[in-house]
Image (cartoon, rainbow, N blue to C red):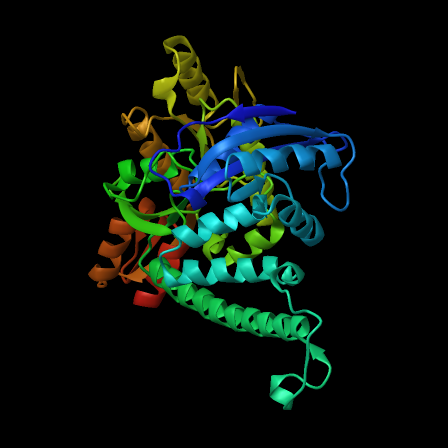
Length: 454
């Protein structure tokens, strides 16, 4: 067990003092360094203004069903908690309801696990109605199996009318029933959110605006890149989950074509499945995007592990590594030494359209089917190349159509020249046969507007 003292606690209330523990269980396969895992857990705690006054890495040979930690470890940290007047203990691992309750009883302080900590952050950051609904749904799904730890009157029985709970119904059963009713209501409200998003998406498609979704590990620089590309002022801090609610803005690509850029919630390793499910309404923007931009922090010591975490969550959404919509953006290249930056940019240029070729650069893996681009969202380096690549990638998704229009229909002909690339045009006395490259959305819009095409 390693204990790391922290002293940066000035300006925090007594109730904000926290202990962060990083259990390392020998029977579990870990692809990350324990020190990096602890540092991420500390960053998560600080993201909701907790003052981490003590932290530790604990090796556990075999998890104890009652407390996860061994008896000696529980006693040792109990002493630290009392000496340091710690009000909250964060255990960066999944805790069962029984383990959580027993640790709280032994330590005489509040205890939360990794899921609980992430939910606390989400709850503090959600600003839109949609975000608040999704956080509440995730929280209730998490709490429903932990009701036992919240009540001191579980043995109390209560009778009454049917709608208050029949004779013999315990308080626990009432609480669980109320939670399930609230979950059902939230799901109905989120279905309405999906319908609204669907209508908005159809409107964007009718306007022939493709969607580009930014995804990536939390704090990889998505919001900074979003601001750089759109000129917006979305909150972009050196903080985990600085962005929770999705944001959309229009951008103009080098060809003059307009697109919608979407910034999404950051991903993180060991994100519970029910959290992904709760945020599915937001993540639908990723599932249905025309281009998915995976933003990576190329300078982070765990950039590979972060990439694997993002790939895992995308897979849960049905987006595999072979998906040709995926473009990989290596962000923060301004922090690389000059030689590494030059190597990265050369390899990115070489592999932009070389599917399946994986060059070797220290700390970097290139596997995106849609190509790789190196950028610095902070300085703007590589951003023009990224915009050009996005433009070309969207152009590559276009198809060829043969369209017959009347010679006299100048409006239809002008529309086609404005929205597509004319490959061939053959005129007869009454009509023109045009071979043109268009997006599916543009073709549908043309048919809807002019009722022509085949």
